[in-house]
Amino acid sequence: MLTLIKDTLTSQVVTLWRVFSHLWVKADTVEYPDVQPYMFPRWRGRIILSRDPDGEERCVACNLCAVACPVDCIALQKTEDEEGRWYPEFFRINFSRCIMCGFCEEACPTNAIQLTPDFEMAEYKRQDMVWEKEDLLIDGTGKYHDYNFYRVAGKKIGGKDKGEARNEAVPVNVRSLLP
Amino acid sequence: MTFEVGSGLSIGVILATVILVAAMLIWVERRLLSFWQERLGPNRVGPFGLLQVVADMIKIFTKEDWVPPFADKFSFVLAPAIIMTVILMSFSVIPFAPDVGVVDSNIGVLFVLAMASLGAYSVMLAGLSSDNKYALLGALRAAAQMISYEVFMGISILGVVALSGTFNLREIVLAQEENGWYVIPQFIGFVIFLIAGVAESHRLPFDIPEAEQEICAGYHTEYSGMKFGMFFVGEYLGLVLIASLITVLFFGGWLGPAFLPPIVWFSLKVFVFIAFFILLRAAIPRPRYDQLMTYGWLFLLPASLLNLLITGVIILSTS
Image (cartoon, rainbow over all chains, first blue to last red; front, side, top):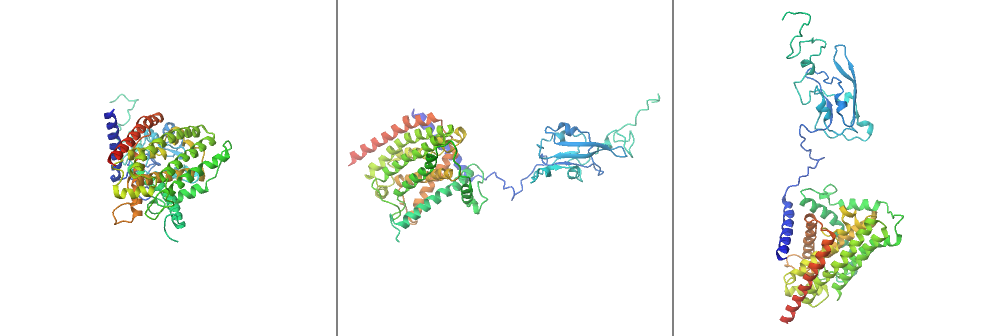
């Protein structure tokens, strides 16, 4: 009984002291509007569409991002230009639905769609949260500076025939028996 | 007009100060709690967030004053008024400084205890008239807790009364001038009074009547606007009252080295105890309801009785 009382008392006093000693520990709070918090480069924030090093759109309108999106906030339509490059006719992200999960970025085969550390996306009107392609498309390459899908893929486009891609062998002539 | 016990000026200043201090405690508590939790707390409105209280008051005054249609209107409105009134009445017997006070009652200690008992009516009426299961549960718990903790709250300060030979709080302070602070001979009484005081003002860790996580807000679940504000401020008033009582009964009231005026000594001591109550809230988890009752009746009551018995024996044998 006495030890129980003693243990209870010491435990309470120790608890009080430990909590009190937090008085001289610096607060963890970042005073956000005054102080900008450090955002990690891989933070999943506002979504952008990047361009390849040549300045062309990376997106090939494969629809994988739209399929991966758990809340169905991505809508796009594929079209082709005269060189044979695929690109989205429109690309629309509804940020009032987006949950910043980053599945679209993981699904993207061309590193086109990327999430950025920007999180200040509040709007007064819900309509303003629907972003079109011209809002999403940036001029740079985003996180992957050297990647250029059409330069490594076997697809034929204007100015690059089959077999001219990086690390690509010339196609085998199936009608010839010569090595 | 002179500044003496019972003068109009004195009463006015005390009333205003006590209510202001109780309102400011909203800010003090949030700031202190946040420091102990490594946060910053409210620091946006005014310097250091000091005007947070003003913002809160504007909000609470402009809120819809709503009485639920199923509530018993008369007692619903009466309940918050009771708690404010009884606690402000208790302040009338507190001696703040040599010439500052409202009355020098010869039954000061009894008056405070009586008012604290009346406070239970406020809580019970609020819970009953709300016609809400959580409010009723809160009121049940509050009634049981307040009535049982009142018992040893009274017994624990009887030691001080026996030592000083008076119920007059001002004379208790003066008696401590000769005998030294009563916290030393009456340490057990002090600890029991502290615990009972926390339970009486239902503050954490004994905020079982209004445990947010279990029963919403207990007896004031249905209250909003200024009626809720009165419960809120009433609770802080109770906190100030308990802190002042501890100061007066055990820590020599306004007594202290002469380099500071007496009222400053009194405020300092009261603030230390208020900070301690807030620390208790920050550190100690809430016990279960039956644990609280068992602890009270099986441990605190015998301890306070024993304390009184030993004090009595010592007084008799030395006189």
